[in-house]
Amino acid sequence: MIAMRIDMSLITLRGLTAGAVKNVRRRAVLEKKSMNRFIVDLIEKDVLGQGAGKPREYNDLDDLIGTMNKDDVRNIEKSVSKHRKIDPELWK
Image (cartoon, rainbow, N blue to C red):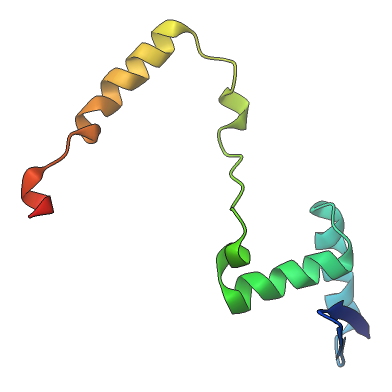
């Protein structure tokens, strides 16, 4: 049985299998969260929508930070510049 406190309300989850509890605990550890925080975040994401009003954190480009030189940046800017043009026909 898992119990958690949300806005002064206590919610008890019954009928969870030992495997489900083990997997929740494992996922919480992987995300470096308490089981309570993990479950609250999970409910907020599913019921209230992604992030529940919290800014979403992206880390998919973290490995590139600090690795590019000026030529790399110039090449990237050149390749994406055509996508930055506004098409006036789309804004009528």
